[in-house]
Image (cartoon, rainbow, N blue to C red; front, side, top):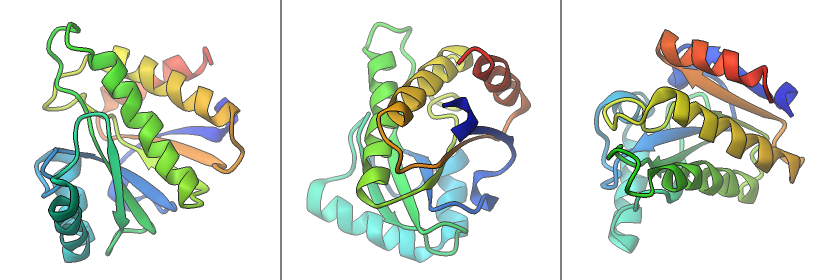
Length: 174
């Protein structure tokens, strides 16, 4: 499966794919980091669709995911998922992070996405330990890909060099 997983050092908003995953906050209205960049570059279409989702269901809870069109981004869709804040590992953080990937991939399958890019969910301001997050991400993505052939390519786009190096080292063990 690792031949379907690509590790990229760069900016997720510049990678042309069917869907990019946004490490969103539960309000879905944009924030800092990846979330802010996706909303800023994607434009008002993303915000307007997020507002409709909020009006219908009241935002997005941790571990869940919703989908919008991608506006000005080089993608068709943005899958917004809310990662857990690290609280020392005693608040089900690992399982919640796993659900971020699973629920995002489910939306990808449901929308005939064949290429998708993930950021390093929860490893920024939410302080999830980077190596632990990478282990969860790679294991979950790999398991999901082994059960489905719809998705041809998964990119893990690392903005910082630490995550890039961690993922490159770990992918060798898949």
